[in-house]
Length: 102
Image (cartoon, rainbow, N blue to C red; front, side):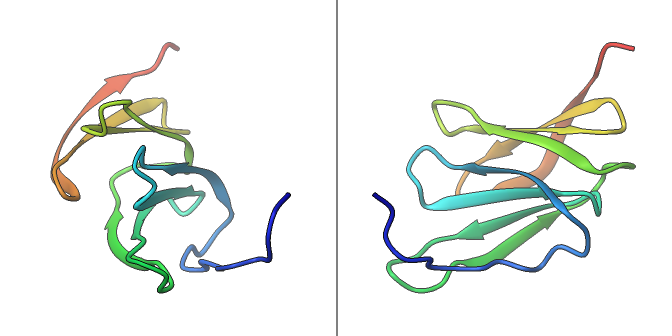
């Protein structure tokens, strides 16, 4: 059974299409129609804080997934690309992208 509602994160300027928790539950990534992924950190029982905003897509973000080993965040967008971000403590600015099937 779920306990009471805890947090509302409302930084996106458009609808949120996807969310993904980091495997250790300390980070939440949220992808939205405003072409950005926002990365929040959970530190203790305090409200999560926005740590990074990842931009670069030319259309809205549609899917997110962390790798099982916590090293990568894959972001699918409506611009037909998958962007793969490398994680250390948080994502770096370097990434690679893969063109989706047409």
